[in-house]
Amino acid sequence: MTQAPIISPIIPPIVVSGAGIGGLTTALCLAARGFSVTVVEKRTKLEEVGAGLQLSPNASHILIRLGLGKALARAACAPLSLDVRRGETTDLLARAPLHMMQNRFGAPYWVVHRADLQQILLDHVRGTQGISLQFGRSLSALHHSDQGLEVTITGTSQHETVTAHAVIGADGLHSDLAMLLGDTSKAKASGYQAWRGTLPMSAVSPAFEPQRTTLYLGAQAHGVTYPIRGGEQFNLVMVTREKAHEAGWSRTGDAEALQRKLKSWTALLPLIRQMPDWQVWSLYDRAPRQRWSFGRVTLLGDAAHPVLPFLAQGAALAIEDAACVAHLLAQTPDNPAQAFATYQQIRLPRATRVQETARKNGSIYHLPFPLTLARDLVIRQKGGRLLEDYDWLYGWK
Image (tube, rainbow, N blue to C red; front, top):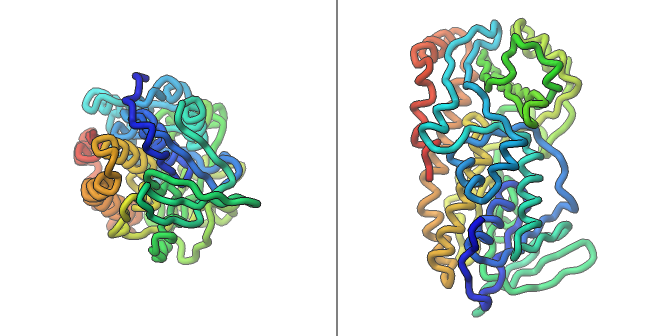
């Protein structure tokens, strides 16, 4: 990476709450602009949770610019195409080549295991001068002062109050920082559950074309498959409609219950039955918070605008947020409140559009029969032009 611009050493560190994908990317973007950063994470360590995620060009170009390109190219995969198939029969409805992403937008469309991306970000954070990483600690109080913010950071047996230039909350759907700011609104259950699992690539039949990203559509359910971990593993996600929901990041799924739900998906059932175990998430949704920024404090990623996974943009939006907020802070380093107000003004319309598009996709993916027939006909007619409607999304710079 090129040498970061010099920010006045008088400026205190910027505190980032949360060491997930959004928080770590924010730290790297800020450090690249010359800021000193303290990342605070309430977990004692980053565990390998989740499964695959998709990094479209609007996100991958940012990570490449941060110097992560080579590491990601080893861990991620660039699928040959996006295929859309009928879930019950696996009949092909449309195939959109993904190499056009690189040609059109100047960056690849990658798929990667969440833990691999998080580890790559973490390694770069640890190797970047000016970033301090604190595990097992969280923000418990904020007070504005003439010098900036007085931030109380609490651990299991101690707490300290430090001066921060600004605070950025990247602490997820149930943001503690948002609650500190007085926003006690709750995310709502969406009525969907995601079942996630992985298989060794050697165990997957070539009939499922595992080197492609495939979207399987049915009635009241859909599935997504793609390669991860440098092509060594195969990621499978099944999303079903559910009345009941459970809080928490994940739980072990009942494989037989899933098979009963998808008993009409006869062509895909052999793959579903191969899965040794499932992790299940109840999916939550909320409108974007109408106010993300409070003076020297702001939110990003899921803390500000969680998005359902039907557009594969949750991680990408957080990465975009990180790049945007760092750019604006560098423009007015002495006035973070102004930078954060501008950041919210710029990002809120885009985040809202992504959220609304994801919700719409969720409805389309889960249409009941016979509306599935009309949906499938429209997809067939689009064919290889299937992704052209998303230039506004993938072309973000």
